[in-house]
Every structure is written in structure tokens, then in C-alpha cells.
Amino acid sequence: MSTSDSGGPGRGAFGGHQLVVVANRLPVALVDGEWRSSPGGLVRALLGFLRPTAALWVGWAGTADEPQAEFASDGIDVATISLAAEQIRGYYDSISNDAIWPLYHDALRTSTYDNDDWRIYAEVNERFATRTAEVAAEGAVVWVHDYQLQLVPAMLRRLRPDLRIGFFLHIPFPPQELFMRFPWREEVLEGMLGADLIGFQRRVAAENFISLAHRLVDAEVVDDGVRTADGRFVRVGSFPVSIDIDEVAGIAADPVTVKAAARIRRRLGDPPTVLLGVDRLDYTKGIGERLTAFGELLRNRAIAHAVPGRPEVVLVQIAVPSRENVGDYQAQREHVEQLVGAVNGEFATLGYPAVHYLHRSLPLDQLIALYLATDVMVVTPLRDGMNLVAKEFVAARGVGDGVLVLSEFAGAADEFTDAVIVNPHDPHALVEAMETAIAMPRDEAIRRMSALQDALLANDAQHWAASFLEHLVR
Image 1 (cartoon, rainbow, N blue to C red):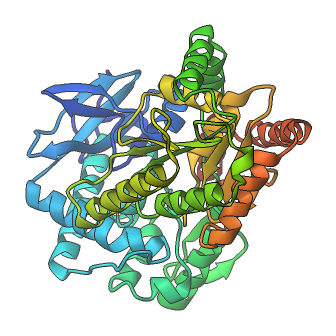
Image 2 (image 1 turned 135 degrees about the vertical axis):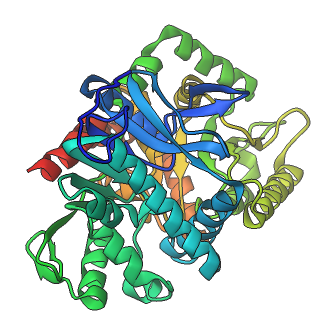
């Protein structure tokens, strides 16, 4: 663990880091009083790149009133942020997840806006900025992540004008007609414009931001970005996030994983076709629409083609628990489980469900075994920033077949044009896309998968992080 002090004003004893990552989520979580690795999508994308850099990761400790701490974990230094229960409720539950999240995902649920909670959101963002200012070395590069911390760049610039500040939004950024609903729209834009570089998953999100900055805060549109009212140039662009391909491919090639995949297939009853969905249990992921379409798919298929005594096609749906204390998410779980019961009630036979449903998180090695056991991966969010599950599936397949059904509203669709692209809001199109994937000739499936892997290899996690930071420093 680095404990060097740069000696400048406002630096704590843990200062001196030349690269600082700031995110709501840490690469570790406090479990039963101990810090343990907690590899989410952002963590997995960044850790391999950060370990050799002596970087520092600043983030919330994950529980209420946990004292701030500094320690080394998994090859990088960590500085935690302490938040009270009321701050967590206002900053995270209310503004981040009840206001911003649905709005940025095309208002799939009604956002709720509370002025007192917005003040808490701003207060917590200020706390993140202050903590970062304490630990960053003179002239350091700071990379701020995601919608929970949209005010941090401007706050941090006021505290530390010597820093190079980047901001990356992992979720979609909405068009004008949606963003204009947000009561604190100017504050968000001005907060993000405190960065030197603002990155989005898709070009359309960058274009949305540029047009809104011009309309609402008088930013001048220039090549590759905007010029703010105080004359600063802010570069704005798309930097699609990716995965550690070598990690996923290595696990997939392990004989232990290959055997596990064969066991999964046998436990499913060796059906002719296995479909797989892996999602957080979130209303943006389209799980309900997928289950409804799957039921219609089974209804449409000729009974004469079915394997006697069992479903001809089965769906494995992994629904990772998410925000279970929020009413919308509780209702979503009930809805999904009712749909699972309805499909199985109509199409399962004794001992052979049509839908195998797991409401739990699985470690990466078990997920990859599922990817190998699958014929068709169904990734159909109603709106998604990127969707790394699609990329993990492609990385796991190696030289072989397997078909990816992919929503046109996932950022991955920009790169994965050889997937079966579908509009998940169209029930008929979703059924047809599944049927196309199931019926696809093996030689076509192999050709498409090879093209998907070429697209993936052109942009792995290392390339994504290096590209963003190179543009930031330059």
C-alpha cells in the first residue's frame, strides 16, 4: 500500500497517487467485518489495467457509518468514503436510482424528484471530491465514473485545478426531450463539464450531451467536444467499455470448466436447444418481455417436433438480485417469477421444466460454464449502456458456434453487428429472433461467431482504459 505524501496543501498521509479512480462501487465489499473482493463489471474491466500503475480507487464503503479507511487490496490502493444512512437513502436510493436511473433509461419507470434528496446527492458528491483532492498527487490523472457522481468533476476542479479529470458514464445518456424533465439539469451538465474529457458508451449519447450543453449552459460546439463559458475545451466522445478477454477465454478453455458445462447440459435433460439469459433483476433488462416471448415461441412450435416427454427448447434465466429494498424491484421480481410459473405450468413435464430460473449471483467460472453449455444467448435489455454479458459469451465460445440474440438498444449492438439484432419492445420480433437463432445452420453460426470475436478482440478492457486515459492525458 502506498503511503507517500505529495506535501501540497490539502493532501492527506495517503496522498501522492498519480492515477485515481473514483466510483460509487469499490473493488471490495465489507462482508461480516472483512474486506473481500467484489468484482462487478466495472471492477473486472479496470483491475487488470490498474494493478501495474500504483493506482488508488476511491469509493463508498458500502454500509452506513463505516469509518473511512485506506488499505491495499488485490494489487491497488483503496480509500473509502463514509456515508450515514440518511445520505445513502438520499444520494443512492432516491436521486441515483429513483430519479436518474429511470430517466436515463428512457423513463421506463416514473422518476421521483425530491429537493431535499438532491441536496444530499450534492453533499455526497462534494464528499467524494474532497476525499479525492486529499489523495491525488500534484498534476494527477483522476477518472470519475458514472451517474452517481456527475457533480464531482466540477467540484474537484474547484478544489484542485492542477488535476487532469476524466468522467465516464456507463449508462445511456438521454435525448433532450427526456433530459429536460430533470429539475437539476443545468447542475448535472455543469458538473460533468468540470472534466477535461467526458466519455460515453455510444456516439448517440455523446451527441445528446453536446446538444444539451449547448442549449442549456451556453457551451460552444467545437470539433470533438464543447468550449465552456469560461473558455475551457472539454473533449466529448464515445469509448465503448469491454472485458478482460484473456481471463474469460482462459477459464472457458480450462478442462474443469468444459466438464462443468457438460454436467450442466446433462442436468438440463440434454435438450436439443438451450437458451440462456443472465441479467441483474432490473426493469431495464427486458426479462419479462423475454419470458413472454419464450412462452409464445413454445406455443408456436409444432408439437410433432418436440422430444417426447420433455420441452424441445429450454431457457435458463439467471436473475441477479438487485436493489431489493426498492419497491419497483420487488414488484419486478414478483412479475418475473409469475411469468416463470406460467410458462412452466403450460409447457413443463414432470422432471423437465421449460424455464430453469435462478435468483442469485454466480461466480464467473460458473457463468462461463453456462455460456459453454448454451446454444443461444439472449441479451435483450430494453435499454442498456453496453452489456458486458454479451461480450463474455462471445469471449467464452472460442472457435465454435453459438448464437447471440442482442437488443438493438444495448451499446454492444454497435460492435456486434453479426448478432441477431432485435427490437425487444416488439413481441413478434423477439419471438422471430429466437426462432432464427434456434434454426440457424451451424456453418452460419460459426461464421457469425468468428466475426463477433474479431469485433471483440479489437476492443478489450485494456484497450478501452488505455484509449480513454490516452485521450485524457493528451
